[in-house]
Length: 391
Figure (spheres, rainbow, N blue to C red):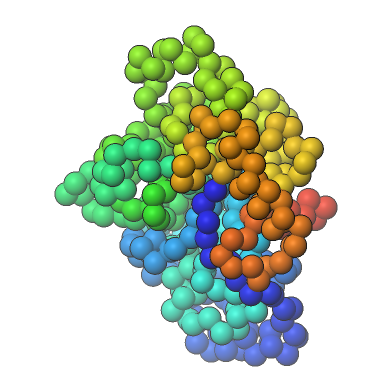
């Protein structure tokens, strides 16, 4: 499991402090609205403009797991991060010349929920660069998940197209939302950029969809690889890794073992692949994601991250812990101590634990590709959802 920084306990902003916040931002910023609190850890903002920065990811020191699925008009996504104090922002960015309108979810990853009234104007103005998932006015949706770049050549994190304009992997979601006419056009745009970066030994990959097709896009050994013939599911392993090698042909015939279990007809996995069990669950119940936005939300609820700490999870999610010396080839017994640590931490439900907090699903987003809408569940609360429409 990727470890990352956790933060102090949140407190609810008073009406007075919210009023001060709104007045301050109204006076200072004409390009975005003051953050409007919708729920604990959730705010809404609208931008008429922002400052694009293709290097934003160089300042991001965090990791995330995540799951994504597209079926029919519905695109589902879980953002999985540590149980911490960071708020999320639903942001709507207006169209302008050279940029399409979009709506999505972002976060300032160094910000605590109790500090929203202290964040600088410059930080809020730059926040669209930290968009994790979204949809634009053309019905193009995209999100990013982690992938274990430690298993590939270091060129994976250095460059995909030397000599072209540089863009950090974290900024890819925002860049595509701003400029893509279609999913295929999004791929074309990225082929003309030099994508670099990740954090530590982890890189990013992306699921990119419109109403016609879905691509899984990955940076592998210094090249951009994009496929539109996958199962339209993405967790935290390379879907495009070694599909035509002799090893791949062997696995196709015999299946591959992951923590002692054989997975047949599965993508070829690198040693530190994560989210294998989540992928299998999403594949098994894939059909229900096409029924409605509610159906897709329920599908994503099946893989909400705290199930990794439940004793009755079936199958158990061993591959959430493939870090260091542990790989998918280890036996279940090898995972025992690190799993126990996760169980014990989860029982505390303490946002102050630093740095080894447990993970949860920060948000479940469902994008309707036809109607350009967002249905959002926050902090694993599936009894309440929030609806947004891109006008």
